[in-house]
Image 1 (cartoon, one colour):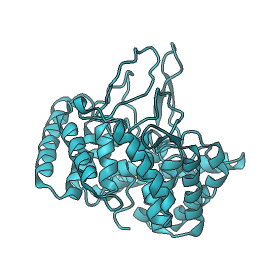
Image 2: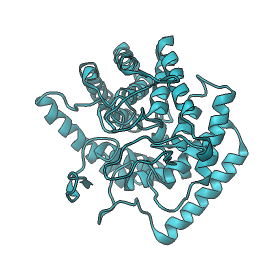
Image 3: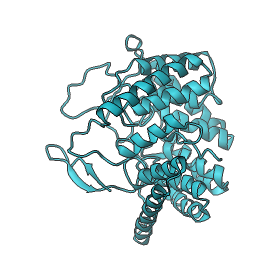
Image 4: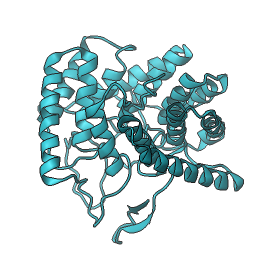
Length: 379
């Protein structure tokens, strides 16, 4: 597929082949097409998915011949996302060779940890932890746990004490340690809680709790939301600036808390979930359909949360919004608010993600949520 990429400040967008990653590359396209084939029974989609997977593996082999196949570890823009994709495809297609490919990639994680500066779910150690845990559910290995522990230790090493709790300085320019799922405290805490449960090591839970304390201290009551501390070139910085999306703001933070209820389920957490879901419901729909920061991402969060907090009101509200969104797409088409002449193909900000979000609305029991890097439904 052909995608777009920023060419740099003051320069036009470049047109280029998509990368290998889950966020906007071959992995995300293959994952969507494979699940579309499984849901629809149309094997033409599976044939395209398998061709995409073959191309992905060819690229990996070529890169491996020149060194490591992927230079970063994250779940969406790094090695972790490819591991996650191969794990799902292995289960969908009953292909043990894909498990071996995923494990071979995972073996590169330890050598990459010391250079990980991203740290977060998107590009860093936090995302790698969850991808490794998914692969371990399918084919358990001490090597996978050991690699995940190294990722956790990297996060503990890089934590920075705050007025309350701890935060992390990542590769994303910001005035303070970020809150939120994709690059911030919510996502890192979520990953550390999974690692604590997997490894049995309390130090990871303690750091996760400290990260949640930092995020909780940043809450902006008048906005009923958490601040987005990113620095955006050319924009005047004014706070509190809050987003309402999976990547930044209440929806993703609520999702992280919901998916961690098995580890932390107390009054404060339940209150935060309710605040986050209310804010998500109040956000304007109809402007963008993508998973990362659009309608289908927020709808997935609402439906995922409603099934886990066991509250029919949330389900009814989410289903109403889902119907309105489907009517809007039928009448006006889908869009991602990209400043380009073409709809990007990828999973998180493009057509594959819109398709995946629609599959989730149609069959949430069969189609796992990529927003929480859920394992295959059969596992």
